[in-house]
Length: 262
Image (cartoon, rainbow, N blue to C red; front, side, top):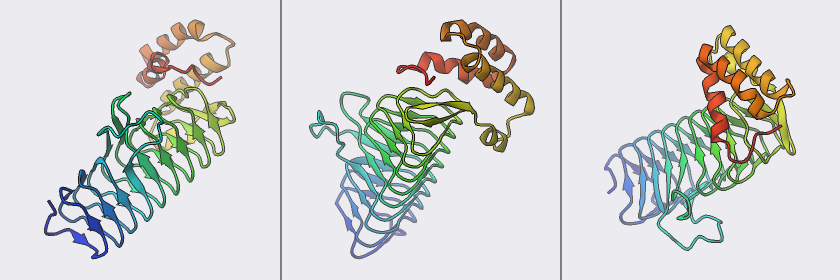
């Protein structure tokens, strides 16, 4: 179904069965597949391909040559009806690729809301990107990567399969991330190692001085005390009891499957 208020260029190809909501703008030479749903107010500039079982929310802007919902690059993929879901108010720049999930996982690739995916960023199958994230130019997420809210992935950075990037993390450009990055941390290098907390980012997001002091102390316990993770956990748990901002940092240890960057 195509809403009567949608603006569609004559050269665009919309397959029967696609759902195009009110106020959507679809520019020249875009191709929209039959199982695609595009939410109210979303703009596709030109030459955008949206394929597969893909749902795109409201007020997104998608620039030319982006490819969303295409078959993934997993060698085991055999055409199963897996999905892509994208939230609201994202800016998806030129030549970004977002691939559908695999049946071997949850069958879905998710991008939340209010994200900026810069030129040529890649979100592989079964990734989950949260809200308010930035993937800079040529940032590459391998399959099954999780990126939590407010994380920033620098340009030319690659993240290994199954890694988790915590909330408010800053990964510097040209890095190779092979293990999990706890919340609030700055990481850089190949392989990426920790370089303190993301102080500027946290200040911009309104963290109090008391909270920043507690986060810095938790970081020091984990990375500067010389303790093992098991030795550091009780001290960080005690900090979390006094400062709720530390709880996500502590909870991340249980979420980690590839080990923490060191």
